Image (tube, rainbow, N blue to C red; front, side):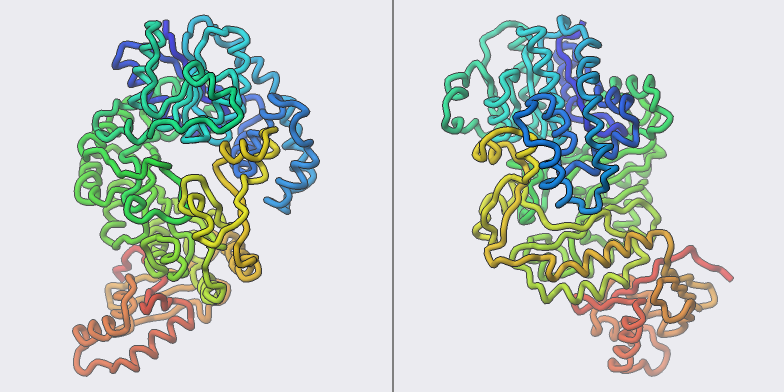
Length: 623
């Protein structure tokens, strides 16, 4: 009988297993310790309905809507009422939220207690000495509600918390504020969870490893009013040998999916990781990015190990779609992992997050290996802003990558952010003019004001970036009935004011409107070219502002348009024309006039002193 159980609570995604607990289960198995994973997120989704579950998980994510539902059960009348939450949190975040939406959200309350009753009664808790909770965002309060019930039933059970919501001082404060919790892991627990479990199960004296805090050993500090003493640096217990990790054990997830009445509505994905940290952030952390916390150091798996793991997961579960948890693609993989993955012929479609400073041949390498989804770190098409926030890319690279991935017809996710402290409002006029030229490309998934996230440079030193009056996002006040200083230690994302008093919407509102128009045109408009075998390039344009439905480019015009598939300067283009022209090539002013005509017609853009063709390549036409 297993003596360890890890619970995965709402509002974790139903489409894939939780990779953190799956790795911990596999690590315990190496030591001969049994562990069960229970996916209670399925139980909640089956109770409220799949569509409603995803609505709560996605639409209410950044207003902590799921957290508040369970917090109301936990704290009762100590929280502000629903009207306050609606007026001060929901409406400012989504002014289009209807009264019907509000009722649908609030009526979810009736499911909370029956769900928790079911969780409590469906498990024989006497079988377990340790119960762990994976607390990423929108999972904390559902986990706390069940943890309290378990502790009331079986006080001897050790309750353990870990996950993204527990990192650093957030985890320390959770230990202080929630008495049911015995241990909190302040960083990834691959190397610290198994030895702690062994000590607990063998009733040995507990010696806390770095990055772990425990109630018994911190009791005196927990009852004090001053902040807790700092925990040991969790980076000292960081996984450095990625190849030494076990393969994740996803069996519990697929068993639960297999007996769910929702199984025909859910298309599962394998979740995998090939690296941790961020090689770019290790050198130049993006100003707004708090991902990885204190673990920015980049580590990746050897290419053979990474392919072997994917082969094992595909063969075991017969699932051929996968998503990487990596924050950034390892550039060395273009010459190693990706060709090996292609050769393995796993019939696997996968997704990755990546920077946009790629070349066409790298995009094609990804696609030939099976890339089916790309998450691009675009954020904006204003090069001075990209430099300001440390992205390490420029506007033309962003458009270029967006074009190439859109052309492939795969899923492309990216966001537009605005309101970066120190940005020049005058730069937004050019971006407003640019966006209509891109309406045939994959539109942004979201557009919004840049946040201040914990661990980001903006959070670490707001004043240096022109940010003042930093405070926890207002949603936290409606989830936790704690004083401001406690909320400041629990919160992951924060609100702020600008030192210069600006309101970014004064100059960014046209960007928001253009992005919404773009989203509405998805799949409706196109700008494509067909390069025929007879040397004629046919360009078709169905965008709203198109001057003409069709253009025919031949000779030098065709050659230049194809050459500008990647962005080039006028000088580089002129050199190219000289090389390919038969006879006397046109002079630079003639070439410039041709390029500028194309820019005016929005079949080309001029960014960062480079000209870039915008039409998407279609299959060759051999007529």
